[in-house]
Length: 318
Image 1 (cartoon, rainbow, N blue to C red):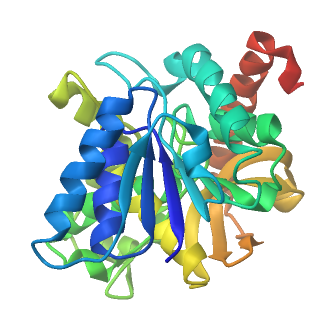
Image 2: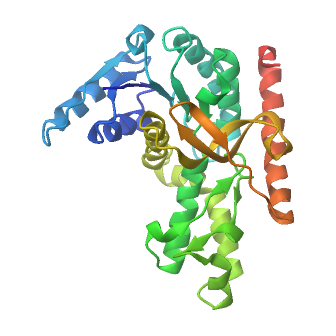
């Protein structure tokens, strides 16, 4: 059985542990600075597995040594958003936390595939890679899968379609400048634009869905008041871990470090990638039309601006 360590035993961490366990994907170590939360959730989930006979070991700890030799590490540690906060507002606090995490994992699990979920995602995963000095193909950010799942959900609702029949993806940074691509969205292999032409929906409705997708996390924060989304982010993280551990070579939209693709170097950006046993095995470079390219560049500029802010907080990132 493989080993997955979850750094952060909050709502996302606990949900990750449960999903991994019922898939029997790997044994799980829940790590949290609050050892009681990690141990309590691990014990509760372990006892739940007896109901259906799942055979997975779970443990909780506040000691990085117990995460040693992990095959996959998924990081959720950090402060979640509160109503009225943007993901970017979390930068200073979560930058310090991710630096501590990098110190904890870089010697204990140097060969792990590391998935980062902590916000502001694109900048935090970039800082994590620099702090840990892990290979760039083994450090990835979970964002595009989540954003895409939200977009697909809203499109399926709008057109009364089964979600499995909706094919789409979201590019760019994980924030208000993310780039849903309606021109590349299909429902039962039929282009979304055809549904606008036949009157099934309108351009105004699609524009509102794009806006709602960009603000999808904030909408949930507003409802919850004391927390942020955790079911969908956890499901997205598990999809990435599963593709790596099982060498599924799935094409998934994730935050990856570009090295000339899309004309961008040394910046983590949300793009489609193939995840297999080597980590990020290929970055899929799409041909964007003029509008998509403009929106994508706006998103890139926002990520770069925020990373420049991170370098001012911590000059070691320069």
